[in-house]
Length: 154
Image (cartoon, rainbow, N blue to C red; front, side, top):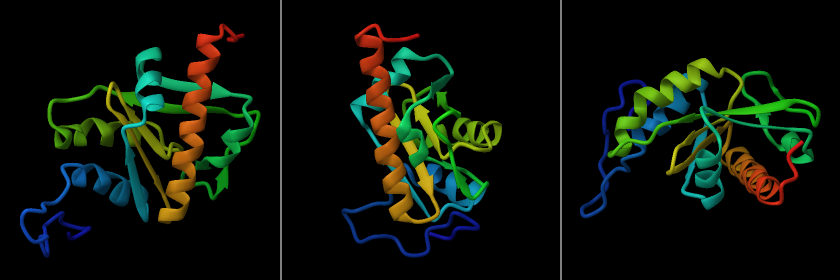
């Protein structure tokens, strides 16, 4: 697929077809110059979208340091407040393109967008960095769920 036009240069052999997520991956590639984008249907990601409104917010957690501050060349610090936008789900995955693009634009330091009752998209400079951040985000999502379940919110 062409990064600049989104055209399919060489389609996979049938019955395989391009992912419905492709336009969303291209949001990260084109708007953030990402080298890789990971999409997950993690239960932890889905649960936090049910617990929070328009943003997932967490602070004072060690694992925040595993998340890059997009475009800054540094990672978040323990004492920082990490904010991840939450967009509403649609019936078809490719229909998320515009709302995801708006979230990426509105949150210039984020490396992730949550989709309500669906999952999360995480991007990074390389697939290794995107994967590592996906794991850190999932840890933070799970922790937020447990904090709420155990009544530990301050």
